[in-house]
Length: 47
Image 1 (cartoon, helix red, strand yellow):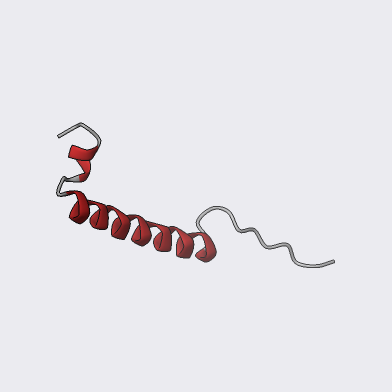
Image 2: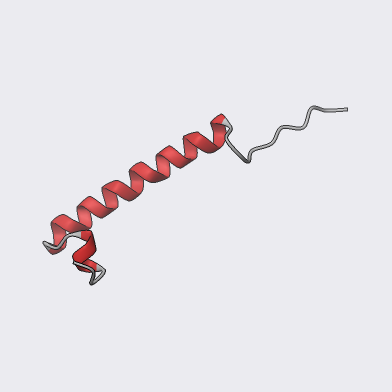
């Protein structure tokens, strides 16, 4: 039969998407901070 490939766990596919989403989150957080003038913790009411 065909070879089953998993896309869960510590595989290259998952790690690639994890890195992409982390970079996207960082850019969104930085942009929000620049637009509002408050840090991320300040926006959450923690700082």
